[in-house]
Structures are given as C-alpha cells and as structure tokens.
Image 1: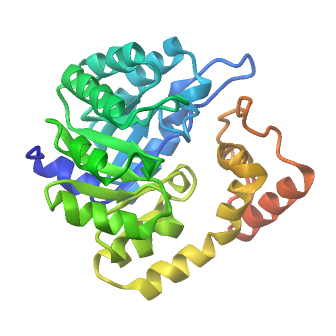
Image 2: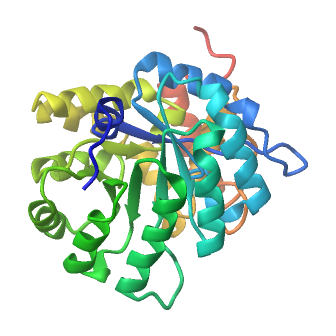
Amino acid sequence: MTALPERARKALSGISGILVTPLDASDTPQPQRLKPIIDRCAQAGVDGLTINGNTSEFYGLTMAEAERMQAEVPALIGGRTLTIAGVGRSIKDAVHLASRAKADGCDAIMIHQPPDPFVAPRGVVEYVRRVADAAGLPVVLYLRNDGIGLPAIEQLCRIPGVAGVKWATPNIMTLAKAIHRVGPDINFVCGLAEPWAPPMTAVGAKGFTSGLINLLPERSVTIRDALARGDYATANSTIAGIETFEALRSEEQNGTNVSVVKSALTLTGIDVGHARPPAAWPLAPEAAAKLEALLKEWGMMAGAAA
C-alpha cells in the first residue's frame, strides 16, 4: 500500500472532475479553451481535474494529441486543484504517457483499464505494475469491469504506487466486498458520477467522478459536501435536479455522454467544438431541444440576462 500525501488523499476523497477536450473547426485540440471551465471549477472548490479521461475522449485522440493535452493543461490548472493524467492503451503508450506526467506538472495518474478483448487478470496486474513504475506518482485505477475478480483487484491495490480505485461498475455489493478486502489505505471512488455517489458512499466509497463539473461545478460541490456530512436528502434532491441532463448523456448506449456536455458548453458561450466519432454528433433533434430547454430553465443560455 502507498502512503498518500495529505493533499492527494483529500482530493481523491472529493470530486474527480473529468475535463472535455476542446476541438476547433479543423478538428484540432485547443487546450487553452479550457481556461474558463478550469477557473470556474477552481473557484467552486472542485478537488481534482483529470486530463485524458473518458469525458476527454481519450480513445478518440491520437497519442500526439493526448501528449499535448497532458503537457499544456496542468499550467492552466496552476496547482489550484489536484491534476490527474489519464494514461492507457498499449503498454508502451501507457508507459510513455506515465513517464512524462510528473515533468508535465501532473500530481497523479489514472490508468485506464485495458479494453483489449483478450485480457488476463494477471496480465492486467503486470500492466499496472509497469505503468506505475514509470510514473513515480500516486496511481488511481480506473475499473470499468470487475469481472477480473476480487483476488486480482486486491493484487492491483497492493502494487506500489496505487492509491485509489475509480469504481465504474454498478455492482455495489462487489464494491463493498472489495473495500472490505483491501482495507482503508486505498480510497475507492464512485466512478459513475453524481447519480451513483449516494449508494456507493453508503458502502464505503469516498468521493465521485464528474463530467458535470465542465458545466455546473457548484452542483457537484453541493453533492460532495452533503454526502460528507451524511445529508443524503440534500445530495439526492440535488441529483434529482440534474436528472434530465444525465439522462440525455446516457442516450444512444451512452454515445451522447460527451456530446451533451460539449453541446451544453457551446450553448452557454464556451466553444469546445464537436465530439468525434464513434460518439453521437450532432445531438438528435429531440435531444438537442430538451437540452436547450433545460439550459434556458437554468438560465445558462448564451445571451441570457445575468
């Protein structure tokens, strides 16, 4: 197990925000367009911001683009939140990104679970071990498939450097067993965003991931603070207020997850461009109309009276 610096431990127990990757009309990443998003997150009190996560379209970026985002975004964050770099794909790609993360100004790395169709549990352990060694930073595991089994999950958590697990599977009882089995030195984070944070918190997870922070970090902070004081009524009522937004993100087999966030940001006046295939772009007319109506209800449409 890894003794985590207090700042990192606190941040991983809070909100792990996942930043979008802004694209211009020529389909080129424009990291500097994240500045107003990052500024609002920092002001609201978001604990950590992740570059090259799934909301960042990590698998839709070239390696050169992922390198650029990792190299340029930490300076925009400027130490105001914990800066986490998502790394993954082939073992060589993951090791390459991980080996650069500290010099790029990142505080931790998040290792994407390998999406290869032929994955052995012990192969994943070796994958994580090599990437963690290359980083020399606290490691968060991104677990989207708990089918590797509890013994493998425990082995992963005992790799030097591993400090947290982003649990992105709805199997709550398996999560509870993993927390009990691994012990208190590893922080398990709800990896399915705000709607799943209350039940996962109830079985011992601390903190949650969020794509909502790109648009409304203040609501994420309200949910975080309510859960920290055991106020599930406030947390659940706040989550109910974003239900339509999250439902829109889950359409087309979750293919609108990033598309809705990017569309909403553009409608509020922050141009982050399109989402790349295989994401759904543009939004279907009915979904686009619902999103516009929601943003009008929230008073967030560009040009709306302040």
